[in-house]
Length: 177
Image (cartoon, rainbow, N blue to C red):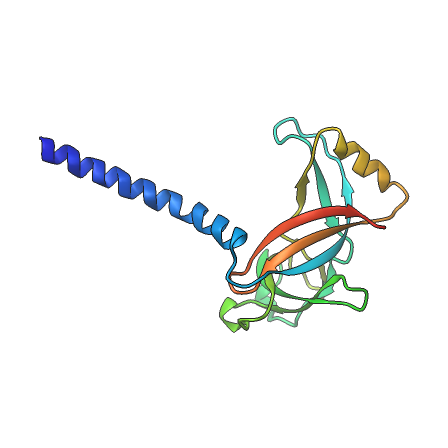
């Protein structure tokens, strides 16, 4: 019986290690990257939805989220699709999508790309859904952020993209200076 308890304890320990491996790997790859991340700045507008279950946050909407989609066969339309958006910088230094890849293996090792969703459709111009759509803030600051943008201006969201692992981290949300 004693040997059975040792085996059970060993199995529990291995399962716990397997469960904790992925979050620890993500945290370590963002906090201690092998290569420095590339920072991209996005123009965003924010609004403050009230949600008692999620707390106070601001909903982000990227201003330049309508891009030309590549020509695809008719079978790809009218479905929700995910793609890898290769990011670049425009003349002002803000992030822009340079091209789309539907297969991760076709991306170069030094290309900064993030996974995005697009709703499909018969038109080639579609709205892209970025993976960062919320920014959690203090309860008092969320209405203040929304009130700052009533005149139609925008804020700058800084996102760090790790080229090798294809992960990203939201760094800051700052008003335009």
